[in-house]
Length: 266
Image (tube, rainbow, N blue to C red; front, side, top):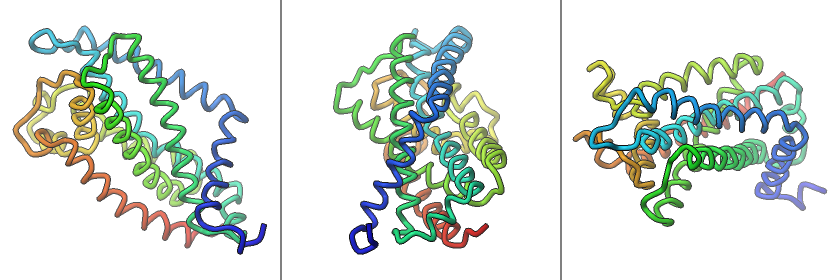
């Protein structure tokens, strides 16, 4: 098909489909991701569940699950980073750059495909959460809004993953760099414990942390317990702050990823 017959949207769909087709062709990727998701739910629910009681008899599993969702979504950047680094190492990025296709399609197609992939992981996590006792208590509309918020955050994180994947020499470096970048954010947060339990110097970081605001936002939308809500702006308006974080992160990393892609060479 000639370049005149295609456009950025159709090119993006081709790249998206190419990335999604890798999942059934390499089933180990999906299988290990599903097993890892279930393992996270079971370990954190039953290891931490008895160690961190909530006031007023709140259910820790319901408190925990939105944090597990947010943590998993934050690590969506790792999937994208490793995939981009792998494509770079195999010369596929150079091949894409030489084809008569929109350059934006390679990046947008990748981010959409990885967001769909994360949606599948989120379904598995939610089903595992239902098994261990997590429940949605705020109705269908709030539930759908929470899912949209999680997937929108995953899409934003995939742009960070593209930038990382194009900035490192191999998949191992991509995985390590993503880990050391995202791992502290997920633990200096309200995912597992209230920010008030952290050292005083870390509490403001935990309160403004985008993983914390995403967790608090989904707890609010799912109707799950969150007895440790603070008086700060991020704690009082987590949905608004999460949307603000997504806009800021996208405004930073999407242009950086596009520039890095344009400058990439073997």
